Image (cartoon, rainbow, N blue to C red):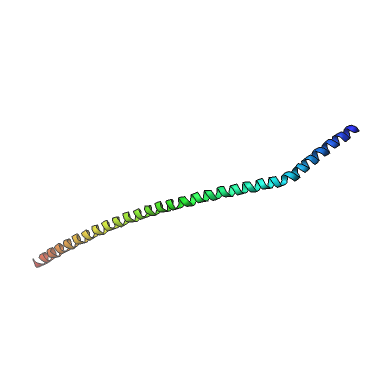
Length: 108
């Protein structure tokens, strides 16, 4: 029977020790959790800051790419307009020659 009391006393002692430890460590644990949350928030803010700093560089590069694309497109369209204008002149000349030929053939 004393063995049962000794086992109960040991279990009760262990339980009380853990309860007292939990009571005193509760504030410390909550402080550590808050500290970790603050550290995580700081790391997250630094990550977003780096992303936003990089955003300006990426935006500038994308703007330059689009600007170059439109300049190339403008150059191509100007070349196409010049080509079409030459074709119009050539067709006008050909049309005039054909009209002269038709008049010559009608005159015969």
